[in-house]
Every structure is written in structure tokens, then in C-alpha cells.
Image (cartoon, rainbow, N blue to C red; front, side, top):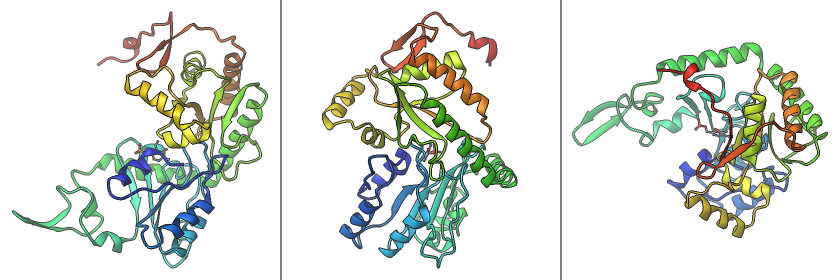
Length: 343
Ligand SMILES: Cc1ncc(COP(=O)(O)O)c(C=O)c1O
């Protein structure tokens, strides 16, 4: 159920074995246990997402940590989606449910792009070479040797993103002030409301849970398709006619999307060939609506209203497909962007 960024980087360092998912997109804990038994003593790390950026499912990370520690392996949690929406308890090192490593990105938590956080035991980072080497990582360098600095400097190569880090700290303090429980409560209400409303529109397929009552262990991330309309067309109409920004496609989680959509290997192969031939006219995927703490019920009403016009075919524009990009654009609409943005 991982974002590619918690999958592809590991492939360069070790053999990656993927944990299966259940039919509704949740992580299959039994499969995790099966794999831990099968690869007993060979598992370097279990890397799981705290919350899915596709279905919004929230993993019980402390419980997963207990399982991993029982099998003497460490756990890393990708909290890019979790940190802005739910309180995280890494727990003390002696607790079997403690999280060994936690990562998240600044730009998902209302800070600017370009910085992120990796939390782990200082002792762990005392050993070995840094991931990235360069200025700032060393105590002393000779022509054929280098003594690494202590963490965290050792792991922070290059000129630091000072402004980014200050902004991230400010963002975290602001979230702390607002209270993550308030944020979570607000987003749960929005999610429940959207799911209730969306059920009134015929022909919407939601990936993952569509139950308005199930909001404790899921985020306000809702991936869907409208009948058999291309996801890129649905997204374009929401964008151009509703002023609503949604993401469409596979959300940097191709294997997860394929599994959720029940795509066969043959079908996947056919579509992959098309993409490699630069034809993205039939890109696999869905549309994703997602909430942050700033969203409100009125915005959901507007979203539902436009979605209804898409489902019953009464939307206004005529859209043309750019086959290379796999995007739809209104035929007779030429926004004068230079009016708003000029250098
Ligand atoms: C679950 C998850 N993990 C990781 C990432 C990657 O974050 P970044 O773009 O900062 O590498 C994302 C971003 O979309 C995400 O949703």
C-alpha cells in the first residue's frame, strides 16, 4: 500500500518483499506475520506507511511495531500522510510498540517544499557512513580518509535549508497550538459528510472504504471514479468548472492502484506498453479528493454539485484529450495566465 517513495529507494539497497493487502485496501497483517516467519533473521527493516495517500487507511503503527519487534526486526513508518492529520506516539524505546524510525515531509504539513524529517535512535546514526556525504558531515578530512561528524550533522550534507527548517518548526508549533485532536475531529466530520453525500450520486466507485461511519482509522483521502469516465476528464471538469483541485492518476502508488482496481497482469502489460510508447490516453487511475484542516462543508457541497453534473452528463465544457500527457483541456477556453503570472 506504499507510495513509491517508500518502495523504490529501498530497492537500491536490498531485496524488497511487499506485504499483501486485503480486498478493501488495508494492510494484510497476517501476510506480514507470514513473511516475517518466512524470512526469519533476514529482514533488515519493515517499512510501512502510517496512512495511505490513496485510500486514506490509517495503519495501527504501534501494533505493527509490536509484531515486528516480536520477530526481532525494526520498523520505519512513512508518516508523510499521517503527521498532518493524526497524533503519533513513537513511544519509549523499551516499549514493544515503539516506532524505530519515522519520516515525514514538510510540504505535507503546511510548510514549504524542500525539507523533511527523519527521527530515529541517535545511537543508530553513530555507526556507519552517512547516506549523503559532503560539506557539514565530517569532523576532519584527508586526501584518502574522512571522519564523520556526530549525528545529526553527519546526516545533513550540504548547505542546510535553513528557512525551510524554521518554517517547518513554526508549522509544527502552530499545529500543536491548534491541537491535532481538533484537526482530526474536523477532518473526520468532513470525510463522513462527503461519503454520505457521494452515495446519493449513482455510479461512483470508491476505492477502499466508502462507509461514512468508518472514520476513526481512515483519513479524508477519497479515491474514486465516476462510472467509466476517464479519471483525467473527471478531474479536468472539477478543476475548470468547479475550481476544485484534485489529483488524478495513480498517486505515485502504481502497484497499490492496480491491486485496488483489480487489474490483471495482461491488462497492466498492455497499458504499460502504451505508456512506454508515449500514449497516455488510457492511463490507469482514479480521482482523489482530500481534506486538510482548512476545508469546510460548503466546499464539499460545491464538489458534490459539480460531481453530479459529471455523473449525469450535464457539465458545460467540451474537452479534448492530449494523448501524450493523458490530460483533458476545455476546447474553447484559453486562460490568459500571463495576466496573472509574469516574470
Ligand atoms: C504516503 C506518502 N509518502 C511519501 C510521500 C513523498 O513525499 P515527498 O514528495 O516529500 O518525497 C508522499 C507524497 O505524496 C506520500 O503521500
